[in-house]
Length: 386
Length: 134
Image 1 (cartoon, chains in turn orange, red):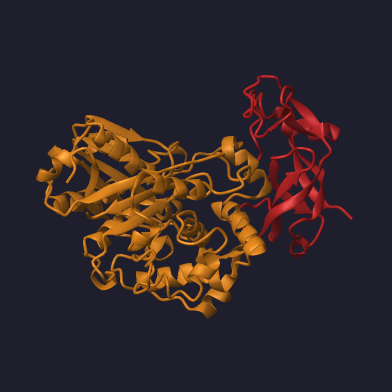
Image 2 (cartoon, chains in turn yellow, brown):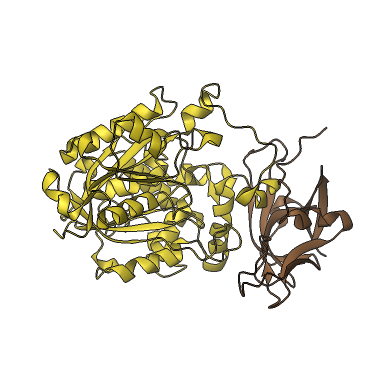
């Protein structure tokens, strides 16, 4: 163990479901409890909190719990905390926490992401969306043209791959098929039914080339990652996983002015901070709010060349649970639910600790990549049990 | 009366872009020092940091750089299916507008299509939509 490095200690997750009745703060508490139990830590040892994107009053379902609220609600005495949306994406909250513990600002930081979109849509009287007469900021360039969903923004990048590189629907389908196959082995996954190629190809289109099964769906859940300082590991019971490298790079913060999604520069940046190489990676947990994002991450991280993602996943063997590069072994967001980024880091740790149960990959995995984000948002973490 | 589209909140930076259509003009911010275009409109050039950035009319033509056909009913103002496209604007290198290709079947749009702006007024906003040329 190296004292000046950051490690993931406890991880936790609430029940994953839609239209949950349990209060989102209590779902967060469920995930906190599980993470503390695993790490052998008490809440009194937590001295930092980090989250993305913080409480969002305009749409509470998107993010109903903020860092400040969690600190106050759980009686945490924080020496450092942060929560906000203007960071490199969801797992940017883990990057912030790792930076803080390396700087000595905190010893054990709870990082969390709580989502409540299905419940909030089902019960608008309890979680009322803020009425707005006009759109501004980023939305003004998209919403007036009916480009309201991130599906529309992502679809245009995907279409470019179709045109330039010949990405086919059969290739793209492998993300959803792999996710759904893996979700069947994850007792907590939202959708525990396999998906066939025929079902995929006959699904209704959402925003071409993305069909229904290329999109994740609103979910209610909370995921917690505890980031601990290298010199605090003697207090931790579980096997620590080192945050061996992290990156979050953006060249144009825009969904349409940028030629490439931010994952591309971010993937290249990640390898500048480590001696590990893509060939050392045992499993990848890549953001797939929309299936194409996972394809772009595979290219970005150098597992294949730019434009080769479709052929890389063709047939699905390579990215299957028993393939050479198992992908999204918990089901990704398409199979396990829209945990919004945190599920990928959670699963990387599960696999590196050999705790995957029915979905555990073979071969004593030691190195994993977890990513979050699409468009101008991108974070990559290299996690190692070394 | 038909439901209006989600409309931008007008401010000092974006007002020329969203209201230029009243005079049939597509206005983009341009740096007067290095001649780069600045979009989204802001009072500083991201290439040379000059503050001499003013709105200028461009020809209003462009090329479909990418597109998607949206089939999901996200908002009552839009009849599905409709085309959302990323349009490379002629004479303004590096500027892309997300908009709709209108006046043609949704399945007739392709990469490289030449398009021209047509403005749709809703309330005090002139939305730059595009139609195919030729």
